[in-house]
Image 1 (spheres, rainbow over the protein chains, first blue to last red):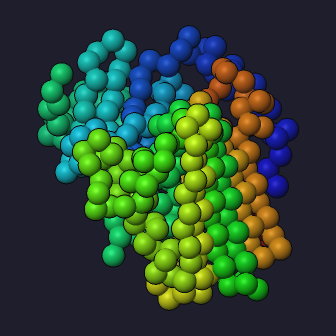
Image 2 (image 1 turned 180 degrees about the vertical axis):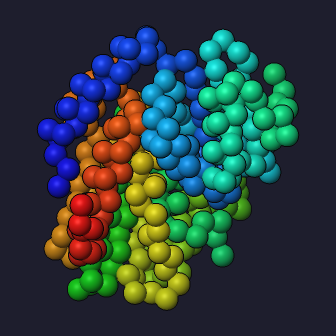
Image 3 (image 1 turned 30 degrees about the vertical axis):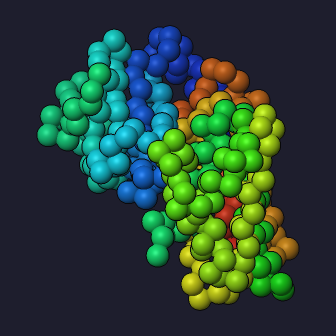
Length: 121
Length: 190
């Protein structure tokens, strides 16, 4: 059984990494998880996000959820915000699109234009 | 029949309602009782709760108005599924106290959807809402598994989120181990 003692050691390592990387997370990725999002596969989208974070060891990103964004036909929806830049909203992001999105936008800093959804500000 | 293929998607949906209602703690209790041929799923949150009028509306898809749209169609579908599978559905709520939702099913009923991907569901729930704690207790026959994120948060403190890559690995391994043991599946040699 996984022990909480193990988690204590992980915490020390994580804090050390965070100290080296500098204060605070610089980016945020949000998955819409309303009833419409869940029905469209948002849980698999979120799982794919978490798998990429684990696989690529991305420590400086905040992962959050939100509810229905009022554009149910575009679910699953994902938003990415990097630093002070405007938040970018994406539609129809199934799990298969996540590796590309993470690589190009979250890590590469270049939004993926063809998957973007224009939202009213 | 419904928008969801798995009961775990319903659990996620109800959890989301609680998290959005400002809950800081959610209990999910799943009991699979083969002797009684029952499956019961109870979800309790300490969010803002609902008044009686709202409570009546959330289980009825036909009188839903635009203002209740934010609740979604998840609850009436779960009620319908439970009642279709030889079970019951109950939702209780009090303003300022929180909400309790209980769905039961005949475990062996042919139309009962599978619980589905519980590991993915639980990880989504606990990572996406860092300010909501979850106590997930799952009983299968005489086996039991409990995940209490209050314990994890107490160890990690404010500096390390559950979405830290190494913590995620720990969480996945812990859930996989626990859920395998619940089903009586052997652990892979490591």
